Length: 516
Image (cartoon, rainbow, N blue to C red):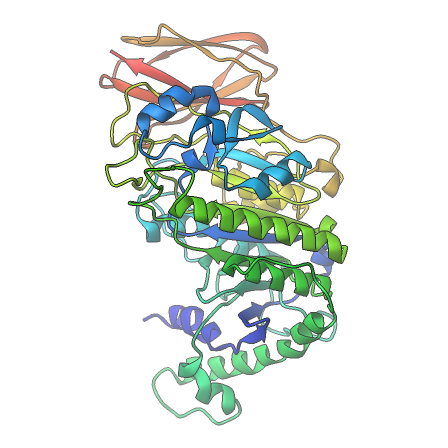
């Protein structure tokens, strides 16, 4: 093992846990003066296993084809929850708490979030989401870790300090998220079993033996000792809160209750990660007698009830204006259900945002579902997940465009997922849902034309197959603003169904095209 890998993967794992409300909690880092200019907090909920987006945000505008593709698990149309964001979609009936937040203007949805050439491996896909890498790339750092390291280039030297005693990032739970891994050091830590590190923690000043990896062990001891100084700060923040709203007896709710308590207690931690598992629903996803019940329904209720209780508590504690929550899962599920009342690994899926300052909007459109769907058909990406990260950094943490490039390595469009006024913007990019892209002839043989209206002088297009694989990389074309038309030559493609993603500065749309 490389020395750097040993330090990164082992040293920070020696931190001792802070136990509050029966939750094991780990923190690393402190708040810089730049971050203190903005006391906004991000709470990330990871839905592990691959959430079925089609039964979460249901395309009621295409209900017949949706029902045909998954007749054994499709939610009955009369049970779908309506929301004011769009009459094209509805929510799973177990998401009543989230639906209430949507109606109160405290919830938003980004439809079909993913990336080109998706991985259907839980481990690889999670790594891609956490590191914000391309699918054919391996990065050793996480997107949030890079952001925090950018703000704290000298970390961990001099941390904690009297001026900045608070943890920078906290993971609640038992598994570390690589999203908080910085370029060299982890900016957050979570662990469930400290037995392997007891000797180091109980005897932090004992001289290190002159043995292999002695320098790494010395570093372990120094970091362990350093981390213990966070205990009083975190404990004092928790003890300041004497009363909270009632939460349901659910694992995610318990994690979020701890987060609310720490924020209300004055902790200046910027990013929290929590987790809800069980979404790998290959079988028994729904009950045959009533598809609105079953495993997925229970997960939806667990998620929704926990978020609603958390949001109510934030308001009760008077800190609702400083917290933004978001959900993500490593991938979605296939369009067509399987014979076991379940769904298999898929591609893009929706993300939820919630909070007092959220833009209560629906970004995107339901994907066009064919009347004939094969077992391998997938939901194509409408929004790159890194564009969502860029939006959080820009509109919630008030990062400059140069910082976004340093964290995400590329330029991505941003969405007004929260009120632009949070960071002093007058306006922000919000896709126009009224844009209609016409593709003709469709089906086509050699060439296909696209007509649309745009204020931009440039448009880009990207082509995906039914499995979500990128067939043609994003290509930019100059246009004349106004009524525009472009002709594309796709004669080299094999006869099949494709998804064409068209994007300008003010809109993007995915069009289903057929080559004969």
